[in-house]
Length: 624
Image 1 (tube, rainbow, N blue to C red):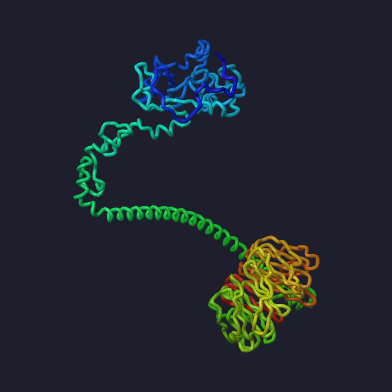
Image 2: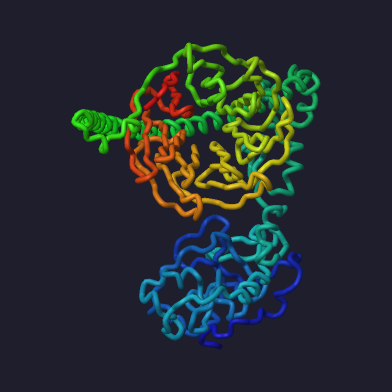
């Protein structure tokens, strides 16, 4: 007799391996095994040890039982079903303490095989010692070999066992005659002919075995009409059941009733789906409400910041006016070198008449007409609207002039060609799959920007012939500027410089502040306005960023340049309703223009005059 479970790969007793099921005769020499080891009465159908059965515990020495008594266990019930083995299991497959066949065996660091539950802490005294050699108790790995051998052991079907007066279990000669492998136990017992069942017609009928159910149903006096759920009260045996079906008033309607049931079931499914949809929509509504609250808080915060900056701008304006008064005094006293009257821009007039925001402006230099959304204005003599140009189905986002043609791009994804002399529409082109955000012309070509795309069009009379599409852009192209032999395009935190002749990208400027909304090019600098209120400046030759101009508290929608031999000024228009004038000689803001009542969205320059369009539906003219 071995004193421990040392070998991991123990062998099963001869005859344990074989087919999954086998029929065996009843015998009193069969080995009986019970998983319980207490004095309580077992559940009904749970066999206990009998005098006629061989107990696994008898295979162990008294010293082992003494060790068990000193090493007190609090066993958990591992199996509620009886296990009556057809043949005696090897002692190597049994726990030395509880004498039960292993369940979930594991190998510990000392090399012994133990129960998983005990090694995980069900041993109260001491929990970290091996019961065999008192070594530190640590699980290494599952003992797959032992588990497989245990799974190959044959046991009697539980429906072939009976309780004995000794409260153990023995083979019942009137029960199921099959023995099955332990691993196939559940599969067999679910379909066993000796499994107790209840009559489906009446729970009060005596218990039956599965093999007797069919015969019982033929004699059962409690068969209900299949239409009882519709109100039929018939109850009888098989013969009266068949006779009843011939006269049952519901039998003739069974197809209609079945269709009604099917329809009702479909409606229940639909209702359940609708309930799920409603629950989902409520969840989304809750999330949207939270998001809306957060946006309102952010908007309030931004308005607070805007009010603060507005107050500061007002103070700066008052201080500037005081300085201007001092300059006027200095001028009268003869000190002309400290004051340049051309640096001061004032609003000289306002064009009104639009019914919506002014998103773009364009100046026709020959006749000096300021042209913007659907309107042609005389800015030289009458200062009145000469004509309203209509033709787009969406808002006009871009205007451009090439020769005697005006090109307008719109949210309706089209470009319309207008004859400036007659102010008539001469052509319409479906340009993009998304709104046309910006237009610029150069070298007898028209460039249009949209979502992740710039299209290059050859201008042939009133026609636009697609020449090439420039790709590799990461977002909306909202800014295009053509200067000399280069095209500058702005998208998300990127400015790309293209050679107009080869249409190849020759340089990429990386920036910050979100999407680029506006670009201006001077003789020495590249300037861009961004979504996050910033104006970045690069050296046009070295392509190195030299300055970031701050001051606006809203998106910089537009930039414009006025250059003279002595100085260069850049004008910026912002969401914060202001215009700023920047001296490119020292990179400082020399003036803030506050006259618009809405976000300033567009700028144009003509003959030293600045035109600004805004969301307040007005266009203002600024001069020195």
